[in-house]
Length: 295
Length: 313
Image (cartoon, rainbow over all chains, first blue to last red; front, side, top):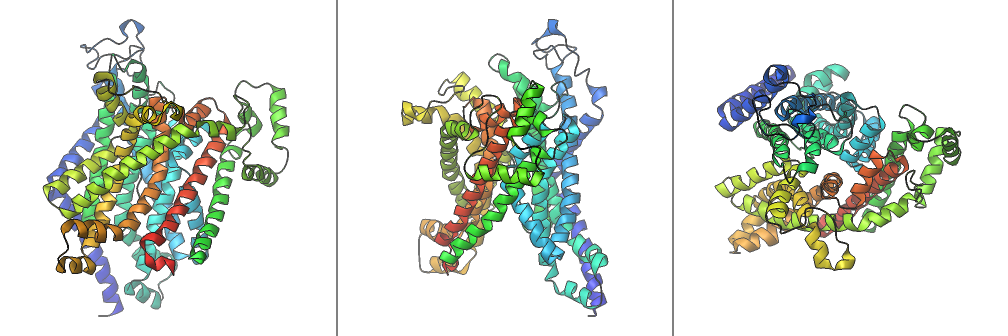
């Protein structure tokens, strides 16, 4: 088998693995259910104005009233529509979850590949990663969100910063593994180097593990953003978020536990669905090591 | 062995220096005047000027960092803007509840997770395994404050077995203290245990497929002996490593849990400091937790020698 055959065979095998993974997902009913639930959450976030009323309108006369035709899940301590806030709250969770996953992926893959390819640069990058991972992620996020101007962008950056080192560590370990493979040595020996080498051989191999890690990063970001809102850091309290709704419900917990239940169940369900999808993806692609964390 | 210990110790030093730089930059490289930032929202110009002088903010950044880090090495983390007390004193005052909470949580976690992981690996792919792993996914999907309020609702509000919130110091007796931290510890332990149970299962599966397990079985050892004495000891390293990595998660959980249960620990101190914009305290607490994590992971590295004879060499 010539080097060219070997190289192209490898690429073919890789494509096969991805489509096999897709087949596995389709054949697995639990996965389909989770996809369905996630889709419902996404639709809920996108079409929130069509589904629910005004989530920020305050109506003190109606405070803490039960379910009614205008407010399906009753009203909170400021007379705001709980159902509307719950529906709009999905926007915050999904936006933060997907954005953090995307940012962690882009920066994590770029830095991770560099750290895996360059000896000196890699050593420096890994010391930085070790140091960042020594700072508890939640504390870093809370402190950053509190120091910067309040807003959803601040929250996204605050949560992304501790997620990036996890991705870097994963990508680097994959790159170091791939570099040991005979076909990479072969590719280097026929003069492939630099960007083409990374693009054709290194990057495709990181795809599976990165996708799984991105899913876990999304789940953990949704939890962290809820923690930030729950502690009252980051976005302003009137922006509807599930963590914020739970913080509001704290004082009325004994008389109105349902105010805590709605956002708590939605939040847990969304994170559960994303985590299960990550696990299924991980089983289907069988990547090496995953570093994960959640609260 | 001594070389290994020294090597690990030396490796921890640059990490700690980098952590200090990160935490320092967090306050000093953010937009705006650090003196105004440190003084808080209600400070007058004289107070701002006083802080600028006291913290040497007119010096170059590198000199400022040197002064701050030098003081930190002598356990001087500055003073709180809110109470004017030294940050180290504030941390020392709050350490007991956090320590008790973390210790009880760790105990519960290991007591729950390791047996579950071992049983799941022993009955791999059976319904017991599936059940345990479903519990594990649920465990780290439900945020700690959701679990916390669920526990409070059933065991404190409805059944009245435990207090809704608060902490009883150790001076009231160990049992009283343990009673007051039961619910927060269970809430935290459920999240942490989910992670450890999964890793224990994976490590055990690997150990059970090794030759020494087959040998143990061939010479007629009982299932319990094989699982606990032979396989679990070999599965120890990944499990201990994850407990170490999980400490970072645990710290985050402690901050949230102390806030939910109104426990006057370091987590509560952190949240209060952040809402009051008390930056020296914020900086100090993060440095404290990070140093603790580095120390714990160092101890874990050293404990490998107990599990893996090859490390001793």
